[in-house]
Image (cartoon, rainbow over all chains, first blue to last red; front, side, top):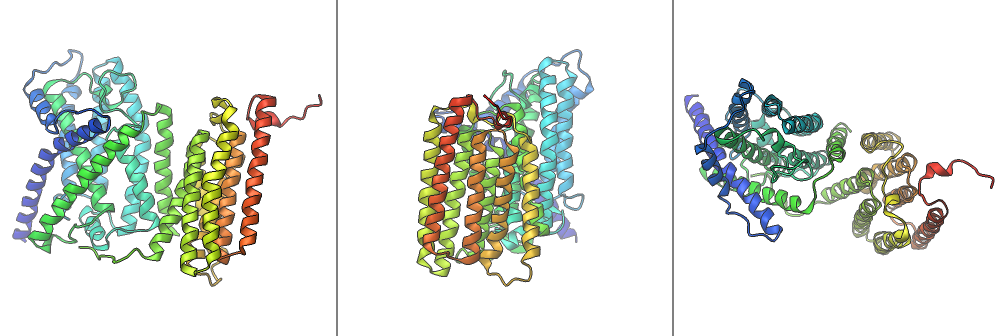
Length: 317
Length: 228
């Protein structure tokens, strides 16, 4: 038992370091792809690291009128996101925290992070923060049912909500070509675009624009707090893309943690490659579409909900 | 490692095409512009031709190949081009469904229920019938296409949407006959396609006259009879 426990701890530590270290690189790759598809050279893929280290060293400006919520939000967001990332089996078919909770807890942690981001948006009482918060509330009220339905589709197909067993079952069966999973995949793709604030929903590249959603809530942040929030945003992106890859495209992932070191290493590398490819695809789609009008965004999110619903219907037929 | 598949099995192909057909139908429901409907319809027709070709390959009936080719030519190329051409002079604001009778989001959810309804109906009515794999996969899809097309026709305000709804219904019927009978005589297929072509031409002409006379495609303004 102790050897197994040690193994879980080791995997957890490795995953923590790897996810935290690689998340900004993923953002950098996405920005680079976006720049190249727009016929720009773009910054180096390591630019997010430079940005983060510079932000980390900079002084912070905090409004006198803000409360403890504003100050503690970056830490809460970072901790919640990292904990959620540790619940997700990213590189090996084992979720380090799976003894403590399942996929519903991941959604809860992401919701907690979003909730505090929204509170912080209103806390500093700037007009932009309020705009961003109300938009985020509208969108998240539609993202969440879609995300839950998608997760239910996956849970029903593979049985259970424990992420370790879900990913193992996915790895054992390979790519499932069934209407349930295909509609679930469509829905999950749309949800990932919405959840990570990508283009038809929100433009991640703008800072002072009336259409911004996520950035509007963070407008008051500077220095170390901003670095923490940006870092957790990248982490969330990496974790969600890895979840998508491991549940829907489990090629190369060994079915069990006892598969031996070589298959596990190959599986981890394959996951990295898949996540990078998915990120490039996301960035490419982002150059192809324009920002949608806020009230049309609901159409797309409803499409995600409808797609997940069809997946559920197919499961019960 | 998961089990490796040496080749794509037939059932996977059928499932993929059935899902593609449903998704493209949802595309018609969720889009708001005429160009969007047409592109969704075009994708639907291409997938339809593909699934017809799969049926032809599996049954080995050459007439179904011809039907698939005709479907591709007429429905994916000729009809969309014809509609774009005819409506070229119509102002853009008449090509957008801004204010449907049933909102787009609600229609999406209703469409999912229609899909469930048609799967339930087909499963119940044909539970005892001894059907092959094509019929089992495609019959519920064709019934959903029929229902969703009908729903699009009654829930939208723009006359162009009525035409697209009719085309979806026709696609559903085509899929129904092909999946169930595996090859109606080619003459009949050609006749149906010609019928659809003429139908679209006539409706396009009507649309043109409508836009010239009323300066609108809103079918709500067609409900009252006028004496003068």
